Amino acid sequence: MTAPLRSERFRSEREDDWRRLERLLKKIEQKSARGLTDDELLALPVLYRSTMSALASARAMSLDLALVQYLESLCSRAYYFVYGVRAGLMERVTAFLRYDLPAEVRSIWRECAVSTLLFFVGAAIAYVMVMADPDWFYSLISHDMAGGRDPSASAEFLRKGLYDGNAKDALAYFASALFTNNAQVSLLAFALGFALCVPTAFLIASNGFILGALFAVYVQKGLGFELGGWLVIHGVTEISAIILAGAAGLRIGWAVGFPGEQSRLAAMVAAGRRGAIVMGGVVIMLAFAGLLEGFGRQLVKNDWARYAIGAATGVFWLCYFYLPRRGHARSR
Image (cartoon, rainbow, N blue to C red; front, side, top):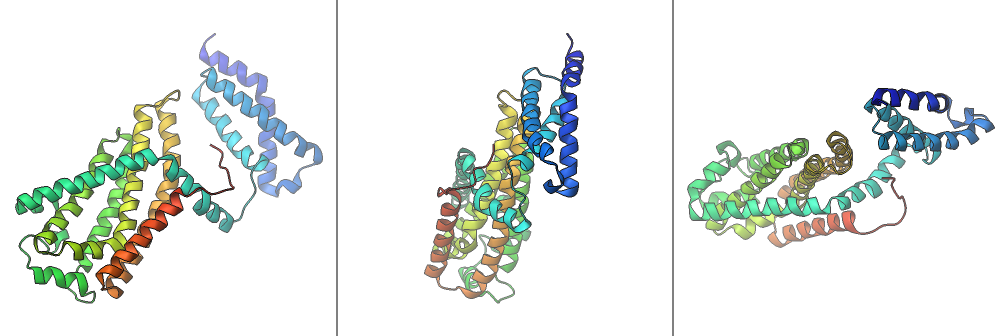
């Protein structure tokens, strides 16, 4: 029997239950569950389970994609009415921040490790290159972004930018350009993950180049420790966001290259949906980093205080993402 005929016969044998479930869902969506009769309330979970069974069979038999997608959509809608709680906006936001985001970050720990390695290896390579030959700096950081903070700058000029938060010629422009660059890299690293991880890996490593090249310039002027203090206030959060975005992109690329039992498209879509949760966290982290950079540069001038703030943010993010917590088991 051909695939279209199998799909048609499969649909005709079960479509009445699907249509009935769809009518009940529309009734709930329009009037809430209180609009259902007792018989309808009892029928809802039965119809949901039978539709789930039909979906599993449709996937196993490799029936046409339109039918599988229809059943997936119907089951997804029914799940939240059968098992879920209709929560308000604040409850959903709380659940996202408390459970969903940390769970997704923990699920991509391998990709996070690879993304971290790419970033810091890139930084180390750029640092060694610029220390050996300062002219490499101009190939790694654009003139506009550097804003005069290059190998030709004096130590006095570089030091002034680190501590004079109100000066017009301080690092404010560079920090703004760096933040914009990091935000763009984060979004592109995620969006281009489908290309078998290659663009994502390059973007993460190239962002490390900027950090390594910048450190080399300041170290050559005897200001490496001071630059580290200036960067660490917001850098721990900002770099962590970049690494997470890269990890989400790597997950998509891995799903495309090694989809397992799913089709490549289905595996990529599933990885993209889960990665979108991580990217929601990345946006929050970048906004938080912007606040830290703005206030930290203006108010905190002591190097040790800067390092303490950076260490505190690092501990916070590690605990937030990786400490186990009870409750709210998400359906996978």
